Image 1: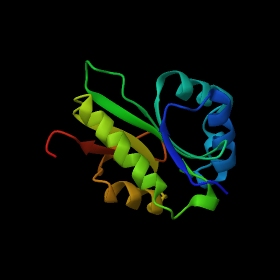
Image 2: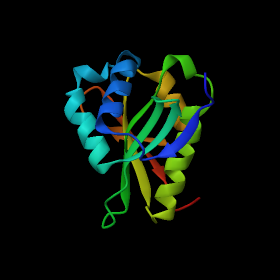
Image 3: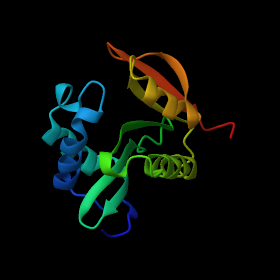
Image 4: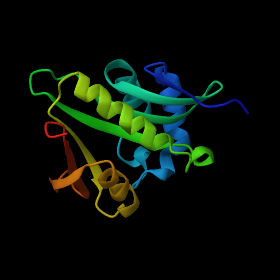
Length: 151
């Protein structure tokens, strides 16, 4: 198996959709229970910055963030996922670091995200990366935020 390659915005909507389907049950609750995966993949491919890990022609890790609101200078991390066969390799952390670096280069003040209230493991991942709980999100979700102005 080939060594993983880390890229920015290489993926197509089809490769994002395939990856999200493979990781669907790893989301809490499953992503397909919350969004139409085809439309969501199209939106991510069209407007999100995508930090990616590829193993050959297979997308195995993805952090997708909306870093396009220069007016508010607030970004939003929409998706973080790695396939089970590469979990534990540090890829999600590396992709998150690259996302934060780009947000800082774009002079963003914060990055927000939502995480399932019951998803302690994912909350711990975000806390490890400097995010803090900032309130309630949609029903069943917590809002977390990373302040980029003091770092």
